[in-house]
Image 1 (cartoon, rainbow, N blue to C red):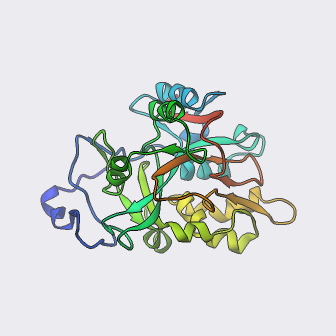
Image 2 (cartoon, rainbow, N blue to C red):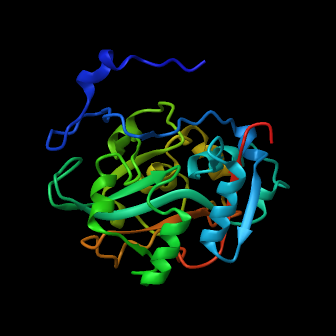
Length: 287
């Protein structure tokens, strides 16, 4: 049973713009609160797969199936389900798009790190890139194969909310590294952009993979499954991929794209073009 803590008991923890960041914080309630995941690994394993040569169309189909009571599997949920699945399961037979996006831009207020410095926000469980927003990015023209954002979209994201009023928790990378707390379906991890840029894009052996800050941000919420995932997905030489495209991307123009998980040792990837095919997993109870 989910217990609701009265706001009066925790309102002293709320964060306001301009205030120094805390290790954890709560945001004021908004019109549409972020959904806490009530779905199990088995629910994700039994989810329906939606593929289309149009990424926004594949995501739209998955959302229509899941409805507001369901979810689209994000990267931590997908990884947790993948390690439980037999190698004959569909999750091991192909690549998948997950409802996790990576957004880069400037932290103008220094809400998480240094004021005016670029940050990466790994957003799990739904963020800026809805089907309509992806289509809009196509119509406007992609930037570095990514959606070009308006400043207000990224600035609002750093406040822990979306323009539609949805709010969600945001955590610094260091908090995720130090804790194995249960995380909701929708949440974000903020990393200094330089840290993400300096990680190797490509194959990794076990220790570098498990300790990679970008891997940790991408799989936050399933870190207890990460070593098992490495052992199951690595190639015979012990290589497992973690790819990104941050090297030549300028974060002064806010932008983002979605993440993918390969069927085998290709691993985790943010290298895929936003314009292309999508393969999402829609999940709902008692499917």
